Length: 202
Image 1 (tube, rainbow, N blue to C red):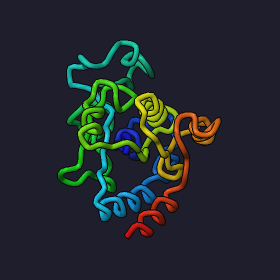
Image 2: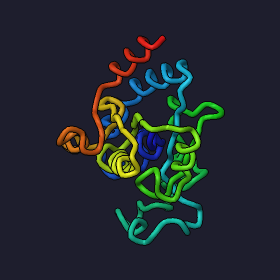
Image 3: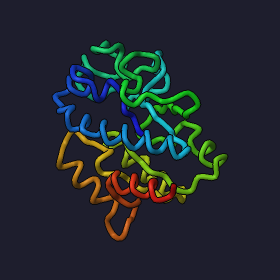
Image 4: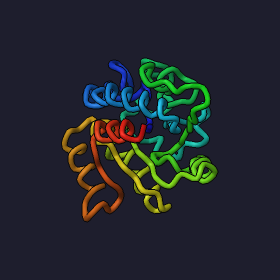
């Protein structure tokens, strides 16, 4: 579950301050909560990610740091603490989707979940070969993670109702790009299909 963080999803937060419609992301919360409940009941692992940086910004390259309006950049004061800084209220996952004790939480400095993290080691240790990918945003962190996972040999299934973009057109095209040419990066489905499959395995 990628970057379901307060900075991105809460009204009044960083995402909305940039002029984005956070309702486009928040529509994923209910289906994600249902999916996570069923996934936990089935005893399957959930890995959460959070995009953010060290307080001194030593892990944030200038090419990333210098994006956006001068007063609303990574590390600047925001409505929920310093923007995308680890340990701040806005950096954490929204209340509705909080990790349970024992679930992996990966703090990543980049868009993709593999860059500068121990995700590969966690998956290798668990013998995982397939990933169901959810979260935000579809065209940025979800896409980057799925592309990287595909290069590493993982089969990826992206759930259309459990990923979101601030921009409906990016959402539509982003999902089409993943599934194009017979699944060039992965597959796309809806979460009820996964819930049905979990029920059938009981």
